[in-house]
Amino acid sequence: VRKSKVEAAQSRRRIVAAAANAFRKNGIRGTGLAEVMAAAGMTQGGFYRHFESKDHLVAEACATGLRDALDAMERTGAVQPTVTALIDGFLSLDSKKNPLQDCPFVALGSELARADPRTREWAAAGLLELVVSVADRFGGGEREHARSTALFLISSIVGTLTLSRLVADPAVAEAILGNSREWLTDAVSQPGG
Amino acid sequence: VRKSKVEAAQSRRRIVAAAANAFRKNGIRGTGLAEVMAAAGMTQGGFYRHFESKDHLVAEACATGLRDALDAMERTGAVQPTVTALIDGFLSLDSKKNPLQDCPFVALGSELARADPRTREWAAAGLLELVVSVADRFGGGEREHARSTALFLISSIVGTLTLSRLVADPAVAEAILGNSREWLTDAVSQPGG
DNA sequence: TGTACATCAGTGAACGCGCGTTCACTGATGTAC
DNA sequence: TGTACATCAGTGAACGCGCGTTCACTGATGTAC
Figure 1 (tube, rainbow over the protein chains, first blue to last red):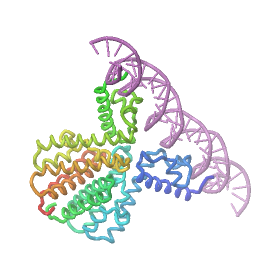
Figure 2: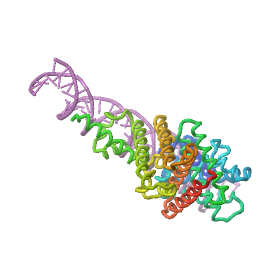
Figure 3: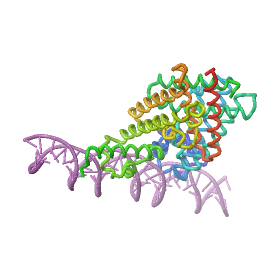
Figure 4: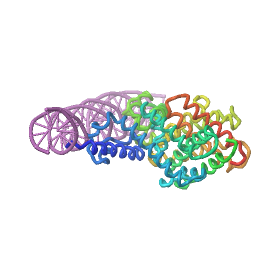
């Protein structure tokens, strides 16, 4: 049942997409390869025609998740040009508005810190890309300052989203998001930063 | 080989302490009960004399980790009375200076969001305690404002520490910490917050 | 205070299960002539 | 363009392993008289 090169490439993409989804939902260690392959419409034996090991899939799924977040930001950035609207989007529970909803840093943060070196390299490079991408949204101003602002924004947002997802009560989660929204809006508007 | 009540209580505490350490180092799903029991100086069969399940141990280990962080902060707070010094400590890689080094939110963030309801309740309650404890460090000022500041500080710090632990290069990790240090120091000093 | 016995902390082996990985096999695809 | 054959994407079963959990057992502890 050999498939054509085109079909094989599609299969590979389906596996990575299914993995990114499953990792985000259940964590890396909480996701089995059989589950991923089934979600991609295949049986688990076929996995090793595409990847050397689960670790390799993890690295690629994280890279894809980051790429998706970057793409989502390109689209959102065009629609929401002000910094305030940008922050509101980042700190929203609505996945349509929030380009970081699918971001592996938020969904897998503490697991990524324990991932293998290859994955962490991808993650670090992706973080840099994300910082540059967010910084570009600020338009004018000094470049290094824009990047510093972007890095701080991302740091705070990752922590805020982590805490808001941890609490069970939606009202408390919203309060955590709203609190950071106010502080961050003020912080990036102040000339002192 | 029945042990006395006092010895049994000590055993239980050793298990929880060993679990908190192991979870912090290897994650919840990355830690086996046999490993925890061995670290506590026992064999794995004895586990169920003290806990109903691994989930119960997870909840208790997280609660203990938070309690340790709170205790560490009480001590640090007395030594570092200024807000700037407080932030410097929180954003330091030196575990002696950083009361949040052992905090489960940082070490287990994304895994806790997927934990069972009991654990998440403990975590949410612990977060509130932590907010109040940090807010108390600010001395005077309006109470609600101090808590809002504390919650924002904690949110940002959790994200910053998560990202700094994720990158492999120590220089990059230090840059991430330093960047947040500057921004947060400015943010809490501004009257606008 | 002394004796008899039930309790239960801890041991060590075993349980079923799901995991990541391997492997023999299938048959359409891609290639060489 | 047509034929012969090597390649290899995908299947489905099996592998060893470590996991959380259970269990029969041991013997010091705690208790009732």
